[in-house]
Image (tube, rainbow, N blue to C red; front, side):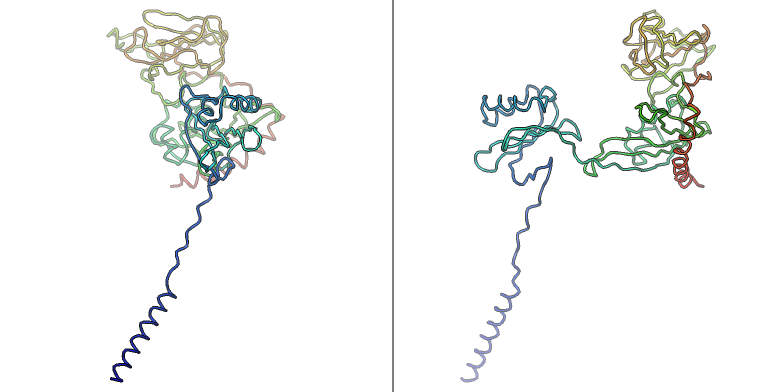
Length: 412
């Protein structure tokens, strides 16, 4: 009997010890604090946040009226902020955010309108009503890439991890020296540039292009931006020897990315007339409505319509050169109007004798139609000699950096 009692005591003691140990090792769950969310300069955790988008019929007044503010109060707020925030600039499709109190009243405290990816307007109604414009934190990143053409210029840049919008920058810079209708797989280029990012992550556009080269037809064409007058906003692009890239004429009457469907020829089979005849121009196939630009500054000599040419515009540039643009769907200039290089003068169409949308670009030299693609055309005003030493000093390290990265990329 005594032995049985002893066993029971020992068992009770062991169970008690185990329960005590379990109590000591029990994990106490700690609730994680709510992550702090800061946007537009406000701690969003403190508010009831409502996000929406401006739709047709919306305006600042009726958005606020839906928050039970009252017509009189809305009018007071509108009057108070009208000098800081032009409410007429509110556009359909733009996002806005409202910060309201978390209590049952849901009282509107702050209205935020996002004008674009980087800029926003704040109407603060917490203490006294006031409005102001702010910009999200912008980070500028600089890099250099070197790559080969594979597909279009936009596709090549995307494959190299660069936003395709850079294609337009390069096309504008090299519009006078590279025919982007003729670039081929394997052509090389390199570019040093800076990009803007919001909060380090959201791409906000290319800020500047510092240096580049495009290897075209076996020749490297360098481009370096330079201001002869440092106080001026005007920037021109020059090669490594200080020669200006800008020519009197653009290489084509369309932006990059379209194809040449027919070249200048003394005998070409006409697809509509079904016979061989001279083709005194260069055809650029493009989508209907694509903007057509004048390749050089001048005065509109003629506009009109003929059965063969369709809608056309002819521009006289000087006593030597004239250009003509045929088969337009729409003419956007008038006779006698002065136009500047790159101005849109019409839209691509298929009027006249045409099987599809394109622009036939014709080029006159001394009154004779010639092949525009074979002309050696005059350059713009050269760099003033007194600025060349400064240009060479600024250009040299940029060229060295560009070449160094390109050599690493393209070494065999």
